[in-house]
Length: 360
Ligand SMILES: Nc1ncnc2c1ncn2[C@@H]1O[C@H](COP(=O)(O)OP(=O)(O)OP(=O)(O)O)[C@@H](O)[C@H]1O
Ligand SMILES: [Mg+2]
Image (cartoon, rainbow, N blue to C red; front, side):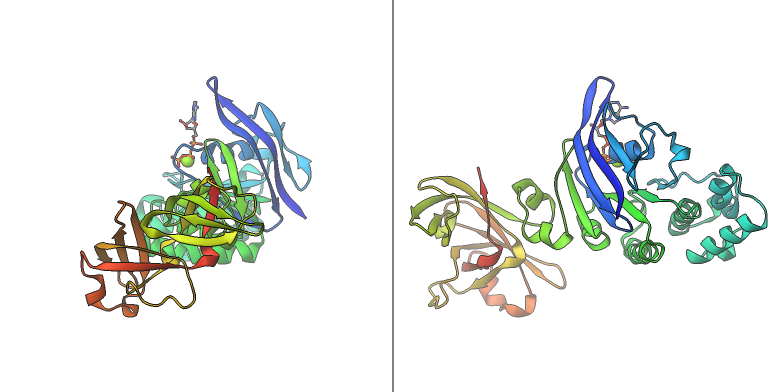
């Protein structure tokens, strides 16, 4: 069943178009991450769904019903913003009870719900405190409890973990995911942290310049992006120009920097066409030059430019003779120190299944 539908939403603010035909269909109980660079329109999308911005065209439907004419407080949506927006003069429990009070729910039933949701976010012991006496993570949980206590149809989270340090953020990501699944609430989480999007969401929507470019499962989007910008935005990538140097009925040969050459399914590639090729750093491995390449995996050659040790992996920058820089992420245990001394010649083997070809 559909939980939330955005149907060709366009938004202008102060005479400027901010959203361009944004469409998305989210299943009931699904969690979608909206990911994209600063200023691409993520918050505007959320505010439009919540009813704070009126779109010039398009429709927002919850469970199949349009809510375009409805005021924000009539939409039964829970919101959490980056700065949490807690009421400073209210206690934690009063903050959580706020949404219920607005819906004229007071008395023992309301008290019970507040207690239940404070327990759910493990804050029942600080119900009497003011927000100023809470840590960042605790404030975040209060905001979450306040959004959830009204049993919203839709939960909208705008960079909810943005203000937390890395460790707390990792912990809250797990808690948030468990809570979202436990309550089965249809959720959109806005983030510009691609790792957060990939780990939290059932599907990820990548947005650029006011439009959704791609939407899919985290793995499909990461491994098989259809646009070079999506590949580039979502994790590390090597993107380089190649030319189609040979074709037959089935295959095309691509040639590029550092002596790179590979034969791939031809598709709609034509002879002498310029294309952009992408591969992620973790799909490059290193080998010693001139080693017999029995499996004919595509390789390219260069010199070790720099190595960066990152604990669980080693990042190696390789510069080809024609001045292209490639980045490989390898396990430090898989290589000998001697191989990766700066200035040493090195070969990179590309995992063929993960090579992406983008038409220019
Ligand atoms: N009231 C407004 N009037 C005019 N332009 C606006 C208004 N509000 C936002 N914008 C513009 O709309 C664009 C999208 O803004 P939005 O806040 O949705 O971006 P965002 O993706 O949430 O960015 P961030 O990651 O920085 O929060 C930006 O270029 C912004 O300057
Ligand atoms: Mg924003």
